[in-house]
Length: 149
Image 1: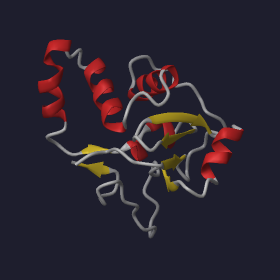
Image 2: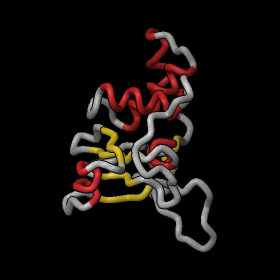
Image 3: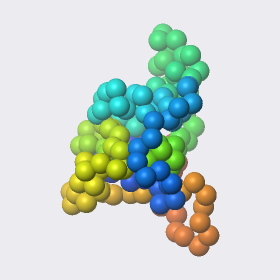
Image 4: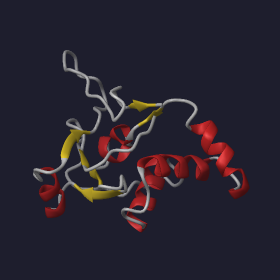
């Protein structure tokens, strides 16, 4: 399975406390690397590509080992970007275009407001930081909450 979405906007999590997009400050963290990659190259990575690139950077995977490492990485279920710290903590929405390529949008911008109201996009909320009692679970691209294999 894949973590990729098509023509979808992942809105900030309902319990995100950030009122604007914050730049993650912890060097080498998942949030910092995702933010760095998405803002340096919007619509360059698919979700799968982004998740693996962050994994490869954090684990110093050599270029010649990447194909095998990617196969091993995706042999286990991976959380989709609804579980990204960017949408859960840092105030960033993630837009997936028709080719599943991703870009990040600051929650305080007009571009974010336009995307979240766009009729031709599927809008899904980022996952909550703490599961709220009694609320229904939302599924990712494979139908499983935040996880795709």
